[in-house]
Length: 435
Image (cartoon, rainbow, N blue to C red; front, top):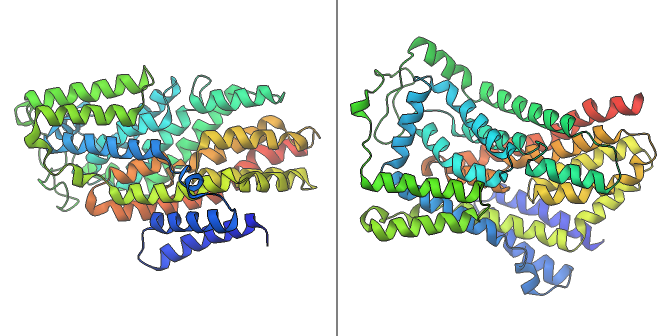
């Protein structure tokens, strides 16, 4: 049995064991990375640890630390109230507002994790306050960021179009962007309707005022409501909240305009606020989602080991030599979705498109259709809790709901991982091969 096959079998076992037994999947994956790396691939421990996502660690810790401070001092409550007033109390609109905001931010060139890191904490706080399914809210935030990223000046769009040009393949940036945005909007609509959106619409129709906000952020029956709060009843902007808002603005501008590292920038803002207002910082470090950090860090470390040791390339090469181009096209979309659910979407887009060149040159599969199908398959799975965006959603979920959000997002991610390649292949690839 080859090393690649053994490594893939161990990955499956990690998921099975963590599902059956109550053990952090990340801890199990770290042990598996050590054993497989040293015993199967024969690499040093330092090489195994080289795959640990240090950047993702800093992002998760920095963002959750900063927004824990913002929640403690009431800044998040103030933002949520202002958002409700902006939509005139129509709470059902807020998931779509978050979708559009994230799409707009990434469409103008911001990195998808940066947009999600800024929007997700507020969106998840809003979900808790107004009894919106946190899985639905998180799903729409991630899909909005993903769809916008495929604009011609977006990160995913620029990478995909650049790889297509470099590989001397025909491309169509408009088809790529609108197809990806349509796929993300469709997934969001399905999530909205199946995860409580219909109830929100009905609640808004029956009582077009803002739902009651309970002090703990949860509880109360679905029908409870009270008149929309007057301006005088809103949380006041004291010095601490005002400075926190300035810090959040610095985070947004620094990450989106100047492309500064959002993790370190969030930590810097949090440290400054802690130094100025130490009393509000009590307990905030405990609210960092350490379990999520361990889980995602372990899984990504193991998958990075597979990438570094050529397992992903081994899979791709095997697909490239499949005799039937149409079957090869489907398999490469499936591989893109599966690997991207646990690794960098950017890296997958850059690695798998060139592998498709041999059978694209036969003319039996349309290049534009396959590239678009591969791009969508590899990106819409970013709601997986093992990706940066999905991990940010889980980390910013309410502590009591965090395990449930993780499990439900994993279910959504794994479902999309299978369904998206099938539909994209059937809609975008098959018609081109039959023409």
